[in-house]
Image (cartoon, rainbow, N blue to C red; front, side, top):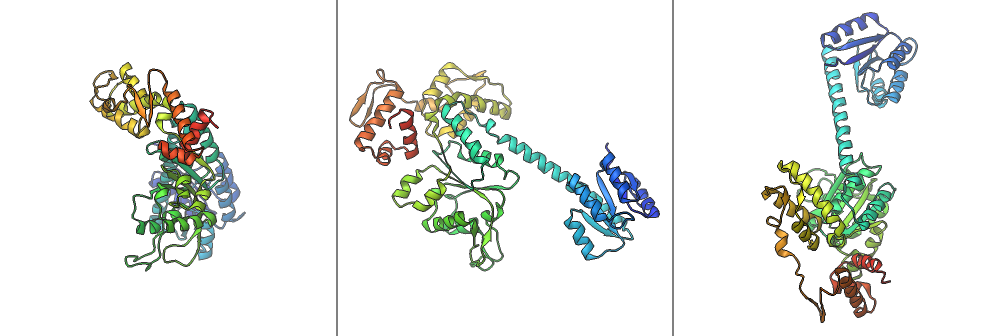
Length: 455
């Protein structure tokens, strides 16, 4: 087992000998230095795991050595010892990065505790850094399965936005398209990746509690406010806050959110003081904010503020190229979870998966495959355990309004294009009205218009 190396820096020979004896008893390897210059030479030759440093040396101050050590190795724990134990010395040493401060004569029980605690704290820091790096890699955009041109374009745009300094991002798309996954990827790609990532579903919290969840409250602000509480906005300082289902916010709370987004300051409920924070806000919704803001259900000025960097995630039915890659990804994931060795889908199951419209998007796809993986015992998934086959769209003649379309004569692409043209004609070019007629979002309609070159 690796023995921890301790560098003891003190000009008193007897004290160094005494500390060496104790450290050896604790199975620690010891190196000694009598002067600051000798200490720095030892430090350059072989970096120790911990330094015990006297503040008063014959050739230089301990604070100078501490600065040098912390510049070269910020995480290295340094325990300061001195015969002149003033509060000012302690404060200055801690400000420069010392882990602990002990006075002479040395209390060896305190020294042992300080060393053990320093190693434990360093170990925790390394583990946290390792886990953060692991999480960062797991949310890298390369981990998001995408083959369709529309999703590849979105991922490219997301990378640019994530690394920018913009503090507001708007994610729009149907439920189950992966807005939360994209939000986490944005956080881990940004300079805020070491800061907190917090998420709140605005529709899941009662309106009267949502403001205090977001902005916190002061003691006595209301009956049960027995002590001050920080809100998510304050806790997310230097990080990212995801506001999911933002369209469900009440109009009064929308006004407070708008003020915060404009100033990056807020007041706790019952508070008088403005608190300034530095966070990135990602707003997510499955609604067309432009459309509902025109109807007065959502503040128009808040929509404009949120719409600085909008990202629209198209539904799965509009990116069929992603269905089979996603399917294979989830099969591999569930192979590990359920300890199976299923290689993929059979041909009939593949066709059904590609024909299905996936109203629940990627989330529905994942759930359908989980069910199939639980029951399937063969090498490939068939139709027997895929619940979607019963809901498969009929290939017979369809009727839309007064227009009957023979599916044998037109491709799905042509049918969709004809429906778009008809809706735009009946709406006299009004895109919001055409979107309502087709029961899609305005952003979806815009995407389709661009796709079929109908401008």
